[in-house]
Amino acid sequence: MRIWHNARCSKSREAVAWLAARGLQAEVMDYLGQPPTAAAVLALLGKLGGDPRALVRFKEDEAKALGLAVTDERPTTEWAALLAAHPRLIERPVLEVGERAVIGRPVERFEQLL
Image (tube, rainbow, N blue to C red; front, side, top):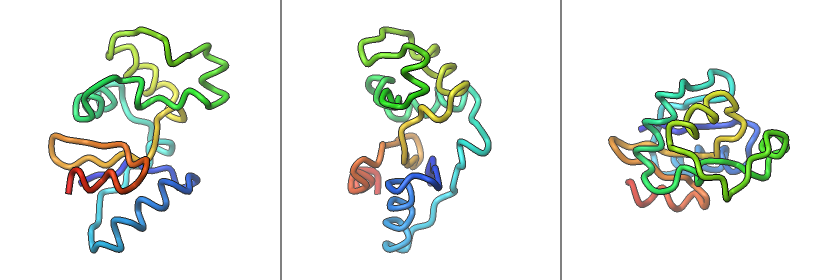
C-alpha cells in the first residue's frame, strides 16, 4: 500500500491519520520532495482508470499559467509527462493498493480498496 502525500495539504494529512486510525500503514510517497517519473505517473493513471484529468488540480495557479483546462483533450501519456514535470498539479491524496488506486476526496473513498 502506498499513499501519494503532500504534507502541506490538510486532506492529505487527514488521509494518513485516517489510515493510522484503522491500524493501517502505507508507504508515504512525498511526490513534491521526490517528483515521480512520467512512467510512475502513467502507472498510477492506469491503476486509477478512467479519465486522466481526474488526477489534475486545474484550480492551481500553475495550471492556469500553463493554460490547462478541464476540457483539454490529450493522450494519457501527455498527461503523465505533464504531471511528472509539474507535480504540484497532482491531486492528493491518492492511495495505491496492488493494481488499483483511488483519489481520497473524500478520504472515505479509500474504503473501496481496503
